[in-house]
Amino acid sequence: MKTHPILPWLLIGSIVLVLFFGQFSLLTAPRVTETGDGLPLNRDLSTSLTVLLLLVGVSGIAIVRWLFLPQVERGKRGTPEQTALASLMFAVAPSVFGVVIVTFTGQGLLSLPFSALALVGIRVIYPYLKRVVSALD
Image (cartoon, rainbow, N blue to C red; front, side, top):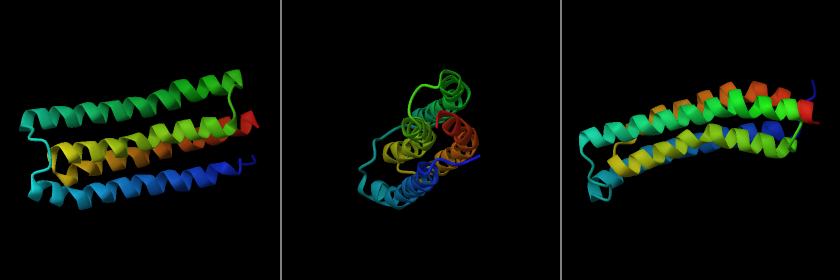
């Protein structure tokens, strides 16, 4: 099976984005905490927001893997580039949620589960994405 030439570049780019957002969160959190720039959230609201954003990240990855990609494969709609970009951006989205939660709470370690979820999402989506994109070519 021949791989579309853009797929390896999108894979590398999405992993770099996840690592960038994860490191950005870890490095920004101490500054947010010491300057008091973070939003003053109580512990219950912070936990609820974290759980909500984790659920949104998981559902986005699941929707792409089990709903979006099978529909594209069956209908042969869309270009390979659009399909790959949309799929991997949904996989990277949880790392952006990590930056959001760090901005709200000032706790840098809260970004780690989001970065891990994004890397797992890339791992779950990419093999199926290769098959769908090769079917579109």
